[in-house]
Image 1 (cartoon, rainbow, N blue to C red):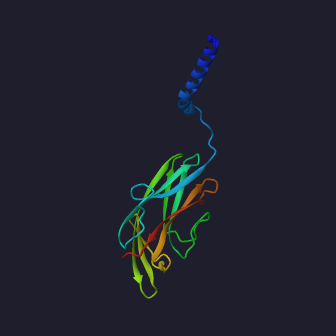
Image 2: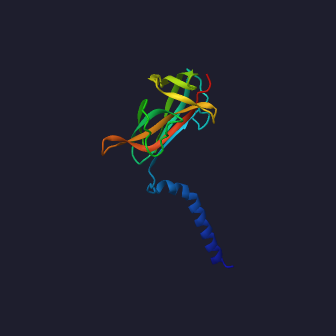
Image 3: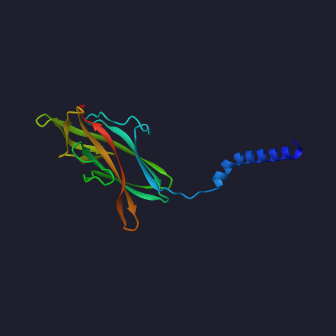
Length: 197
């Protein structure tokens, strides 16, 4: 091999190494257009992680979770969260909002590419109705607001062997064109077993 061939190989290797070293810096300078716009909605346990959710609950004991909203819409968004209670005989929300009555509403602004963790504390007061083999709910303390739950019941589930319900969180997004909140096709829920007293 002659000197010209070594020089060509040296220049090629040097060029490739320079590109590899410079690529992290170039990725910060080159801004590619965003193609996906969405909102994240999730429930986190008391330690701000996706574990240790309250499940087996007792009456008048306080439990904590966090509701996280992540905004990837390309603008600062204004959200409404409807909190509802659902037992196993009632339908869950999927891409349509739940028809259940909202017990509590939370509004929040979230910056683009930002995330907000909303603390949720709750406790239920309820009693066992032996005549109908069900749990009768009396009230729900949600973020220190006591909500009347009379008329809400949870029937015995013989398959799961418990009294099951859930706190349902439905996400609504403010639409500036219609100047109203519209359901944003996001719902999450925390399952609860009220079998313990």
